[in-house]
Amino acid sequence: MKHSDYGIQLREKQKVRRIYGIGEKQFRIIFKKADSQKGITGENLLSLLERRLDNVVFRLGFTSSRTQGRHFVKHNHFVINGKKVNIPSYVIKTGDVIELKEKSRTVQAITDSLDTVVRRGVPQWLELEKDGFKGVVKGMPTREDVTLPIQEQLIVELYSK
Image 1 (cartoon, one colour):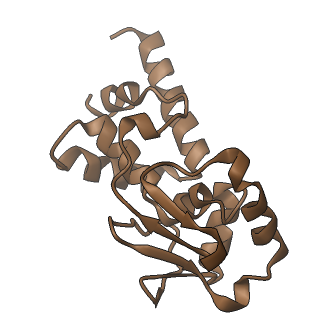
Image 2: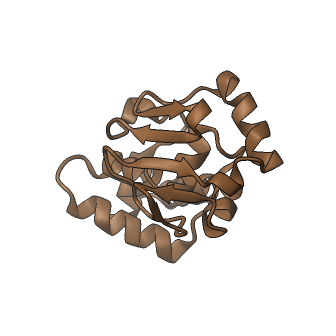
Image 3: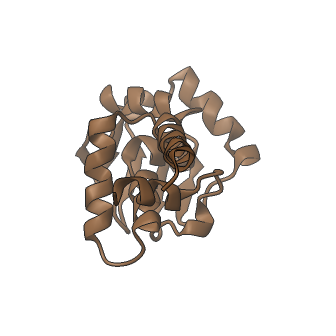
C-alpha cells in the first residue's frame, strides 16, 4: 500500500465522521459492529450510520441538520414506540415509530424544518406522517438510499489493516 492510499482512506473516514457528527471512538464501535454483521461491511456501516436516531429525525425532516437532530434527541423531544429515548446513537429498527412529543410540536425550528422537508424529500425506507408529527421505519436503508458521496470501501480498507 502506498502512503497516498492511506491518506485518501483517512480523509474518507474523516469526511464520513464529519457528515454524521461522530467521534473516533464511536465510529470504531460502529465499524466493528458493521464488520461482525453478515453482508458487505461497507454497506452495513452506512446502514448503521443512517439508522442512528439523530440521523433519522434529520432524514424525516424534523430537524434541518444532523447536529440539530442530536440536540433535539438529547433534549427529549422524541419518543420511539411510545417510550422516551434521548440517546442520539440509538439505532432504530424496522417498524419503529418515531414521534415528536406533544409539547415539542410548536418548537419553531421543528415546524420550519417540517415545512421544507418537501423540497429535501424523505428516503423511501422511511415514511413521514407530517400531520401526526411522526415517522415510521418501513425498512432498512440500502446503499442506493445513501446518496452522499461516500466511498465506504476506502474506510473498510483502512480498518482492515
